[in-house]
Image 1 (cartoon, rainbow, N blue to C red):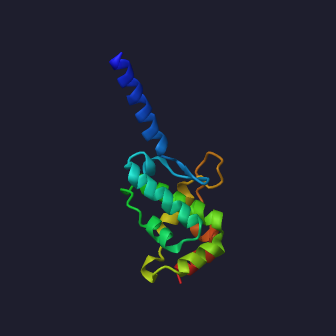
Image 2: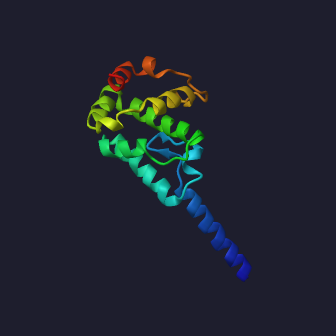
Image 3: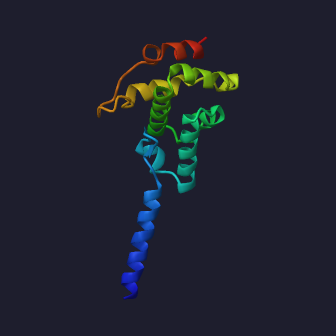
Length: 145
């Protein structure tokens, strides 16, 4: 009987912890490499930064842009999160947020490039293979002024 209770508690706790991690914040899809391989508290922090960025918090967007992700595939997934935020807010509103950044934080080009090329921003199940200067020309020109 004790073993049964132990296994039930273990199963419940495990499902609770796994259920607390998310791959979606208000419709913004987070790639596996950003949420599966990090702690619960880092996942919670990232989720909060995404939500605050959607609420047009420039400081949160800077923190999200610089979120420690381990590089490689995680950088691609972070770029995908950023491009989804741009689409959601609109290019003009995103530029207005970036204008409030310190100048040394205004470079998003690498993240946006990989987010557009490898992300699925049109949600059709395929990588988009889009280019930054074609998809967001005003933002591209602002960043590369």
